[in-house]
Length: 340
Image (cartoon, rainbow, N blue to C red; front, side):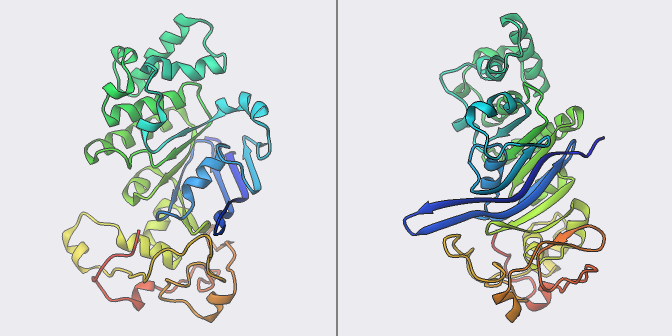
């Protein structure tokens, strides 16, 4: 499997001007997704992860930095210049109800990218491709004649996935693809994504707040806090030994299936709420909630640096060899979970 990046974000910025100032939703994000790789992007609400996903597929225009798809810089391309390239990347939205045109049949929705990119030679070829795609996402041929409101939430999300994959993209950005679904169908949609990604080999940026889902699906994880990435590592390494205090807090808040472990493990308490991106704290943006913060954290911005072994961390307190303090040592065991 080639690991040449299908997505390269370098110093990505997305700022929004508002009445109260400038919202720095994404502020210097550098991230790659390899061909055939699933990269999870996690963080609590307001961290900027969905903004990064929208900029990656140019639904939002970056304020700064660069976006490359398959090595092509698409950062400032016009909508017309982007059009022939869009078959290479697609976004699966969080809520399928709002992303599917209620006036169109399922068959028309799935066939639309084929028509826009001139892939299907005629109607018969388009219909055959639609039937094939519906089968691949676990739906029957007769679903093609129905409208979105006639389907369940899980079925609508399967339609979104079929539409996104209809032109065999190299990159799929999945923005919270299961969060709007019933718990009973979330696992089936995750399994579908995993199977399709393995069979087709596309790169995937998987945006979620669900740590169990990202542990299951992702090869590598990037953790965002207030517009910036604070840690990146292979999934197993990140879950086994989180380095950044914020990552430690996120993982300590995630439920575990073993009730004994759940009752006895130490949980990291974060004080306060996520600061406003209108007025982010100076220095390390996490210092206002970090139980380990020192004076340097309040004044000096930590850079995202590569540690021995290849993982990346943005924290003054983590040594180059990966030695990191345990934030749980500064908290009260088993009281309440960190905010997520």
